[in-house]
Image 1: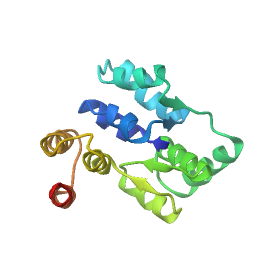
Image 2 (image 1 turned 30 degrees about the horizontal axis):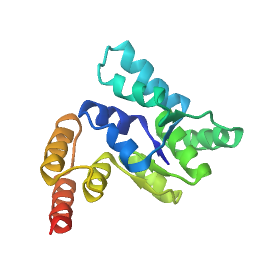
Image 3 (image 1 turned 60 degrees about the horizontal axis):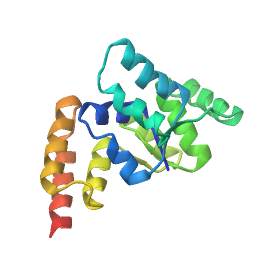
Length: 171
């Protein structure tokens, strides 16, 4: 089980790879703010890819959870002290209190996760993990990384690291 922030769900939807989350983690937890960011706002702008996340919710492998009072307080503390979006703060709070890994791409949110000692990974890391666990071939990984670079900025160093690691794993 893992917590996903909106950006990871949106980006994986745009490249048609949301199913990897189910294969890798079986269950994905999201909070109400993230659900609103992905599903409600996605529908409002007629984003066809939102259907992948809706299907995950219908099949219950993506699960919306309500935040507890403790999590709400933590969200507020994060928002009061750091310039993060509400979805990132919610995802960090859920991961922290429930002792789960958080999938998050925002650079500042990742730094906060590190400071809070929350295990975290970005979308590119999900793709690499999917390759390592044989849910993607090397060619599919290359294609997915290329597609990912088309919908979000990827550091050339990240791309190099991913492909080098994949080549080493493939040997």
